[in-house]
Length: 59
Image (tube, rainbow, N blue to C red; front, side, top):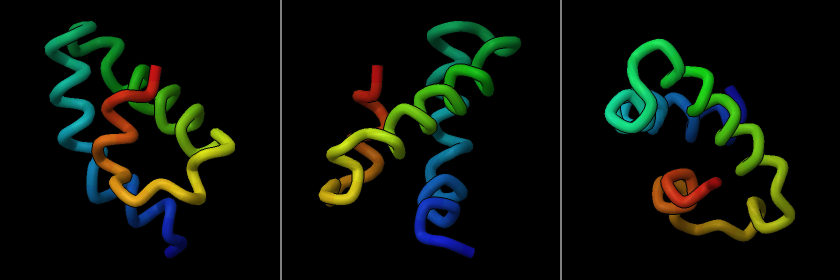
């Protein structure tokens, strides 16, 4: 398992719960996956030290 997969597994459930409160249960998983892809493809991702906080602020 790669580092990014470990980070995703660690935070995914919490992020989906948060997204459910924002967009509802039907779109929450898609919102999290879209945010995950944007975050991990961002130029800054390799230097991020607090992945949880960075994932919550990903637009």
